[in-house]
Length: 184
Image: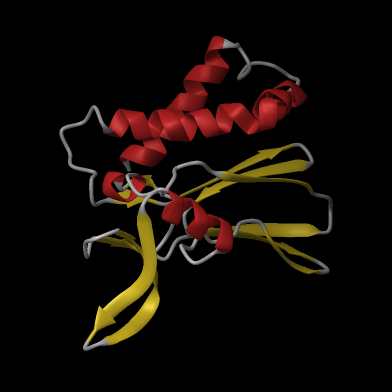
């Protein structure tokens, strides 16, 4: 709960400093969230991760995925780090709002390998089994099955990232509901 509480409080504090919780113009909030390539959202994820370093808990081999959804008038802004998912059910079908950050995705793998990590499934009984995972170059750890998360600092040492992927879409009356899910 630390991560979700931290991010919620980050935005609450930011918007209260700007006196935007009392504003009648939600477009101001949208403009702040979307300006500079969604800098405020990315900064919230980085700030949360930096705050983990200040706690007495050990986040070297643990962390969390994060999926964040802002609904502002006729817009949805979705920020995703890891493999939690969001989709939107509309009359014409399902719209994917997030994409899994898996280590074997080409761009993710390239970043990890350039940072000195390796990407491969677990090796058991001489065979590779299961999904690709992130490992330090010469060790059998951390074995993270995603390429982005908040925390997981050993995985960060070999190229994993907390940087969210942001999707910004417009919605209308054909949109019925949104599902936000995690497998953990």
